[in-house]
Length: 399
Ligand code: LMR
Image (tube, rainbow, N blue to C red):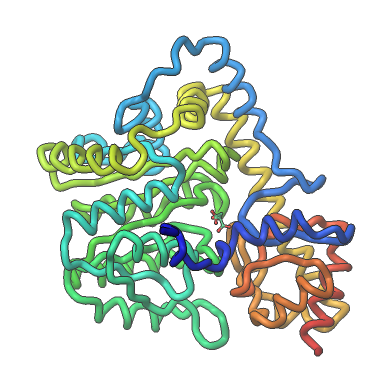
């Protein structure tokens, strides 16, 4: 008997497979605007200096490689919760918040998905259209019914009115996934006023928000990017937040993140955390320790924290200047107006408005890699190659 005979092939991951295709491309002019990793002027994804310093301290002081507990490192969990919710958070003061360390933000999402599917039976989850493609599969794989609310209109620009109208029709009690900042893939963020309106609908429909916070510090700043999360945490007794340290600490491959739960009271939080520990045990047992230990060292040390936040600011400012540079480079091709939205977007990504076939053409003819939805990782652009990129975009736009 051939046990594996019926196994069919699935297409590669829409984002990670781009990395592999890019690596296999031998053309020297190739340009990687695919997976969301920050790159410096040399095209490298650097390890922040604060991380290197913290790693050195860790190596010198670490005495064991024994397991961390099911919820991970309590110091990391506490400091990350403060970074997300603010040190003055009322929910933290009332001991209604718990963080569970997870393998990256993706692990936090999967844990949240399992939690919803096991303990909030019958609740559907609503994702923005478009969203990070892995959101779709994570929740579907956990057995949840996945639906969508519109985020952009036919013109590929943010459409808050359509979003609010759709949210207002979501069945009472369902879960709504919101991107705290640097919306992936569009780069369009809600204004403070928009967030207030979303909150009103969430309250009216008694929805449970799950806020994905993967880019803290990449939009407007560490504190500014947390504005909506803190608004919701203040206004609602119950909330799920997934936090990632991949981008802002440059710890991508160390898989460092957390699921934060705000509960109505401490007693209920303890119940929920017992369930999360059970689910996590059956997913990955205990989380990987290294990245979280590094983050804990940085956040606990004012000097290292200052170095890190300075480095994070530089990354953010560089991305903002790259956005401007790209629009300027498109100007001689008469495309500055058409792509002006790139300057209004935030974070690593730009929803360019390029079609799937234009994206394919960019890859095949010009070795320029971006996600099929037309998402470009602006942080992957090498400023010296703006003219090359602009020429290629102009070419595919006129074909
Ligand atoms: C992305 O969207 O490119 C990043 O979040 C990396 C990933 O895991 O897909």
